[in-house]
Length: 115
Length: 107
Image (cartoon, rainbow over all chains, first blue to last red; front, top):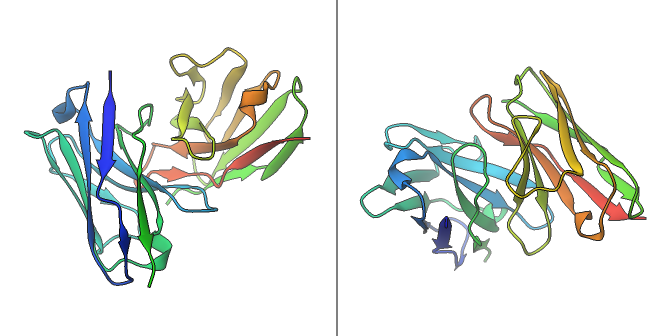
């Protein structure tokens, strides 16, 4: 059974940093690209970032480019999202998902950016 | 970036009625389109991938069609659990993008 467990969400002030983690199990993590997708309150779903299976290639939405860094540790089956220079508009539930078609989702982790 | 435009924004229907949702891409994405259902407080759920393939466990009342720039999700007869927000998503080009969503509400 595929399981994705996101963690690291918290209340942080604008300009602050946060690191999200996603612990994966039930599939061969090292063979799948991974993505972060977020859902802001009252807004639609938004893809945030993705990383190739090897970790060599990374992709970002324009709104987070230069502020967020995606990485992975295939030995630990864990995906990360380092979030810097956080803004109010980054407030959202953040989900991790394998692949480019998102048939498995975790429960998400809530990031609140507010002073 | 590929922009996905969903219409209508809100669809008001009664249980048992047919729902037709549209997703239009700003450029051709072949058939690399997926549809998701999203209910408040829950993770999104994949319904259709590659425009017309039902995901595992998805009832036959959900069907998808289209290619290139125009896509349709059809729910043949709405069940009470189908009232939610629906999103389309393309995987043809980076960055991946979602449409703005269509809310299917009870009339």
